[in-house]
Image (cartoon, rainbow, N blue to C red; front, side, top):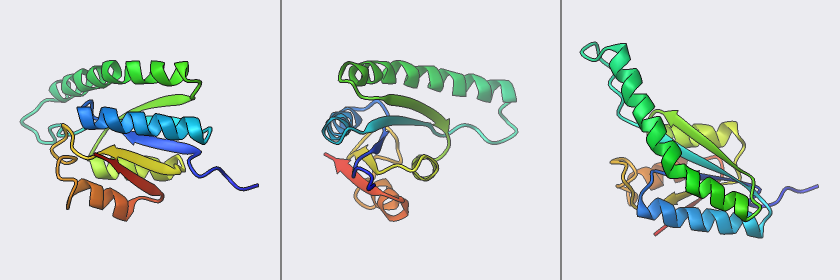
Length: 145
């Protein structure tokens, strides 16, 4: 039996307006194709060097994790109201690498990203992140403007 074209959708979500518009698109795809939705927020720019203590890094990461939990909550609730199975992923790393790795690991059918966002990496969609995700992704990539 063939799988549905948008069975597992990964939304790259940074909390910006463009990623909110991308959520609307991802949700519509999930409803239309009876798919499930995975929200991925990436905690970027964690200090890596000795000048920061482990406790400081842990505190920064925890603050970012809580921020993304709060930002994702209404989206997860909306998906549930629409009858869509949705899952949250809040991961540290580089936006492109983390999104692509999660898409590979979770066997996603599509990745949906906002055209411009808060991430300094996602901001350069024309020749940067969007191109990199599309080049490296194991699936369809949809950029929502």
